[in-house]
Image (cartoon, rainbow, N blue to C red; front, side, top):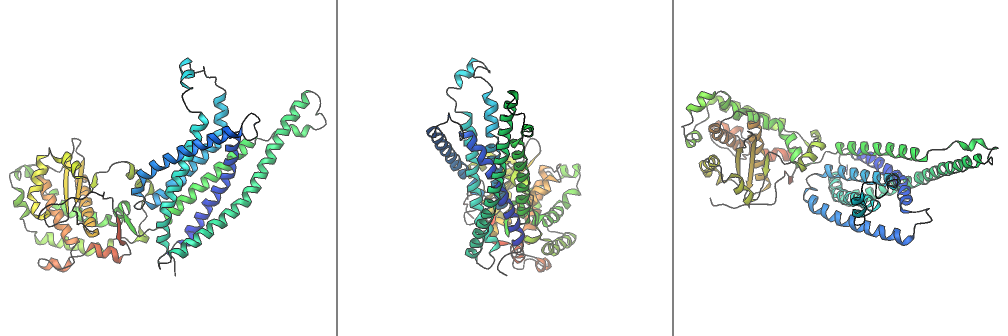
Length: 493
């Protein structure tokens, strides 16, 4: 077995979407050529060439900007950007199809229709044709960049025996075959649409002739065929099939690399169980007990020893952790939620810049107290976590990585941040005086989740190493894309 599971199914849907793209390209190209002036006696070759050159130049500039913004996320969000590439391709082809209709509609308005100011302003604005074609080209360039960047990761996923070149050669052969089949169907579809268009033109000519009594002997030609309606019906149908095939194909991929969303799904049971254990002490307290403990120092809370009951519940969590972790075949993350998370900031900020950290917490006296009380523990770690709440009582977890942080440290910091976020979200009335205890208990649990050797007492026999367990489950722990930025810090022990 030289390829990963699901290879044939993925190639089927990939071939289906490629065939739909080729056929839609035939229909859309006809519309673009018509809008450019092919078939128009008043259009010149030089004007069309200049327009196409400017269009391609603007598309290239936009493609460079897209690459600058999106390239850091290509490795982490392979399926998301592969799907986005095809959506952008759909947008580009839709603009191409709608180009003649929009130009015909806009030509019905005179320059003075919107007022004299618009007539003057239109002299300095690019033509509507140039704007639409440039937008279409930009979408196509971005599509090519995103699809090309993610194609290598998908090939690596299927080449489980190191046969990357073999898989890539088969992929190219498959694309060539699909293009050949699409070309045959495209030629046939083009001939059918041309015949319908010619029949429609003959019908219009016949209607004019009937008005002069010159076409009385051929009344059958008076029935006009709406070629535009048929073209749009074919285009929309193929577009729906194209989007469906791409979405199903991406959902079938079970990548072995851990990005942020896949890690949340794979670890959700462990994070929930650990968070519930962390909150056990908090849930037993009411507001009065919280106020009574307000004068108790944070250092005293850190010195509390876990009871036998706490040890028992912790052992149960550690026992279930290895069995409840999901393998790559069992994880199917939401692509829409993942794409939303790329654009919208989240409550957990990973690997932020030191300047942003200072601006975020420089005015927080409470955070300073927390950091100082735990500095002895953080000094031995390769990450530091800061927690805070805004005025709307929303929690924020910020992680700073050390310069020497490894993949294990990244995973450890990520799980710790997830436990803190889950705990604060499910206990919104958590007081600031309790957050120190929350910090301490979550740190205790993290230490037991990432232990490869024995520690204190009987609990050491139950200690596990989450990093190695995920590796045994089939995850590629050499490549982690959990969302940490490139920024690292250094501090003295």
